[in-house]
Length: 437
Image (tube, rainbow, N blue to C red; front, side):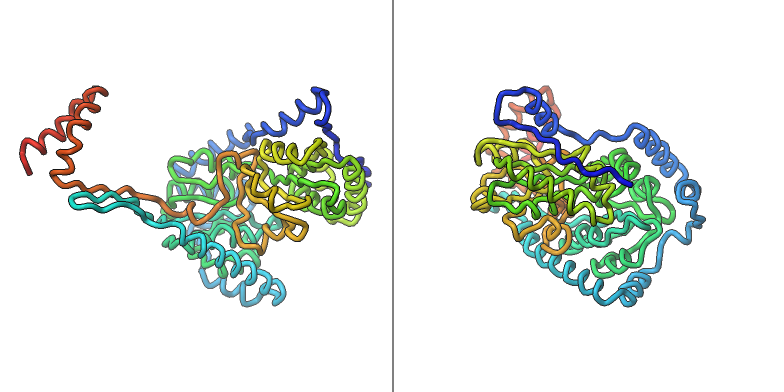
């Protein structure tokens, strides 16, 4: 029998006690440190795949997953995705179709903002040209950890911008993940996973194509492998456990606050569910609501552990403090259950996604709202953005000068080049002017 839920730990920042303030600074300064064992193991796996290709994938899949595969088995026929979609429970299919349609519609609008810009004057053209990546891999955990929504939220933006080929990596693929791949427009599916799959698409093998970018969630070994191959390919992020910061005042429903904290706590014992409030009575009510709601939760043990070990209720004095502390925390998911939430949302500068008002649960963002649910974690919202169309394009600078335009810049170019000790740069300009070509 599991232990009863004893309530969120309270950090009272209203006074001058340094202990809760220091604990809060630690939470705001959190970072996702890679597991040393996973990092070391992934390093060996990546090197094996880099040097031995398909043979290493076969051996590693047998060792870690107890699955016997030949290289010819890696890729599934694309028709398997269509078959899975056709056989899917109608209610589940309708839900996936609604989610896919809304994700696609939102990113089609987003894509319109990705434009080529520049200036053209007589004798001079300066442009920034935008174009899609050629091939992208989407990683989707397989088996019992099947998240078809992640396939939609990662693959659809790539297809919207015109990526030529989207490759899905999923070990032991579930039927619902394959169905989601069909709806997302995935081009190829490989039933390989783990760090070996990441290495395979980073370097390419005789069977698995090399890609330009890898996106999607995975376990510690997948995450470590993504970090190791970054630079050889691009990646979306080094993602940590899920997190939510619920900002609430006296107007908030304790039941809704509790439900939304649980919605993230049930992901992982390392998930971070945090309440930030100006109302001490709300903390008591939320703790009572958490205890009640956890009783009937199938993933009670996971959620309870996350709430106990990673969760907190942070108490501040004013609405302004709610805003400043929310910005300091820079959460993956930020819910605003306060009076006039829209005006508060306008003052939030650091959050992966902001959920405004009581009718916008974080769960809507996970599935059907439209923006991608692939978001920065561990304070990464200070400097990075949600996955979007911009992740699947690259910009190229295009420059064209005529003789008079180069002549007008020559003195500055040669002076700067020689100031930096780069005589060859200066001479490359002077050669052109001397030849009068």
